[in-house]
Length: 252
Image 1 (cartoon, rainbow, N blue to C red):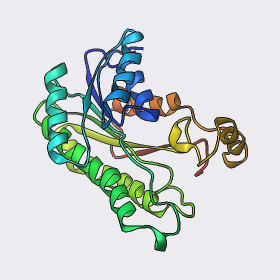
Image 2: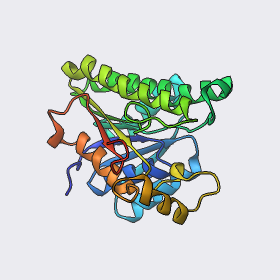
Image 3: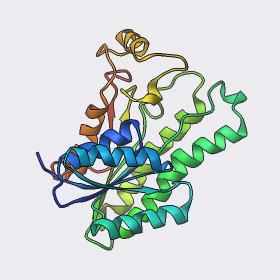
Image 4: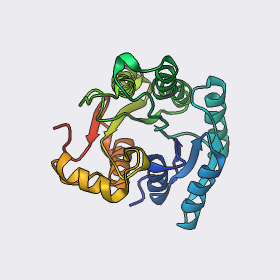
């Protein structure tokens, strides 16, 4: 399928894991992809993988917590590929493990700044362009931890991702009349580095998933990417403000 031929797509946090898988999936369906993140080397690897498969991509380094950098990121995306049709706000961090009362202020601030304010800043500048240029689709990456499920010792991350879900729904209502359609995907444990516990191997993780997830396995990164592409595609034209959970049944 080539649902995104002729479309320009921006993916933040595209240097590894789910962000890389999402960027590659859009490119495989014809999109010109801007891979954004803080580390140039990993972004260049993503671009190289896309180009090796016959796709089109470019990298832009940007910190989503810095409004000026995000504004510049959107401007450079528009300049590079002639517009911005789809944005996927995937950049996020996992810090501040432990009981809520013991999380450091530094960790709390860092998680909320990246995972919530970073998504808001990205949407702010993406929407500013899209609403003046025929609209577009935005997909934010939340998590099944947050609005859908809680576990001990992850309060900062859970709070941040619940906020992304609520922010997505609010933004969707605010901007759909301007032609900007906004949704979220909430992955559970997926085949990406963030789902590995300290000292855990991929084999250990697979064994843990056999009992933790009703499906008996974690989601593949490509399965999460498929959900993102659906929400960004014309087939989801009437889907507004939803939060699509892809977590192998963990929060069911």
